[in-house]
Image (cartoon, rainbow, N blue to C red; front, side, top):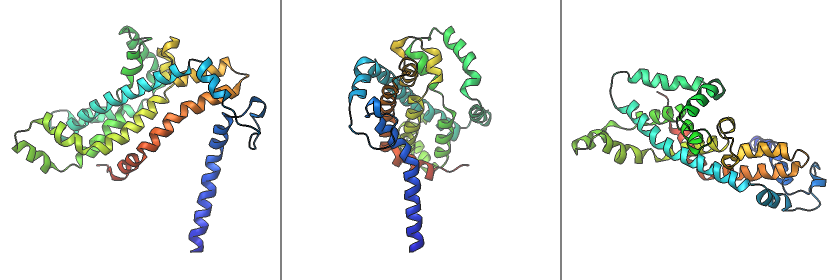
Length: 266
């Protein structure tokens, strides 16, 4: 019993050690400029930093751009990825194994490697400084296709056979059988996709020079140069940008943990 309590105390202390820098950073958004680098509790808390960022900087525009891009990419990607994963898991066609191997192989390629050729393609399509340029390149995610395929391999084939007997084709089976069963997995992937697109920086920086198309991460980077001597504004902006990600993670953590526990690798 004492050993269990000792482990619990050690775990709480470790958690506090990990979270304390985040708490201090969050508290710094409400500190006066004169107390920004103090380690203790501030003498007073103020909303002036947050109000300044929201009123004197087009930060709401940055938040809206990030929200629009992240939500659009997440919705479209989940729909396309689920169809691709269903085809790779349940449909028999020549080259299926090669197609799946090609998809998984793209996990080895990072964005900086393909940044220049991707930008050339996007510029050739006339999508520079447009929402399409921010959205379309982010639709493909090999990890999402891989995870959904592994999940669909575990779906009992008896369900599909029963649907075939009722006269359902592949599309109706996908829409009425497979898709409802994969809601927990889709919810988990929605959290991952939203967080990844909300936090994206390199590609939005390269493809969108128009200030009205800036996403929140690029906007914070611009604030760091513009307000180099006013770090309390930058910290307030960073805390505002982190709030949606925390909210999305808290709402979706149950499905995220469940999907990681139940998805097997075959």
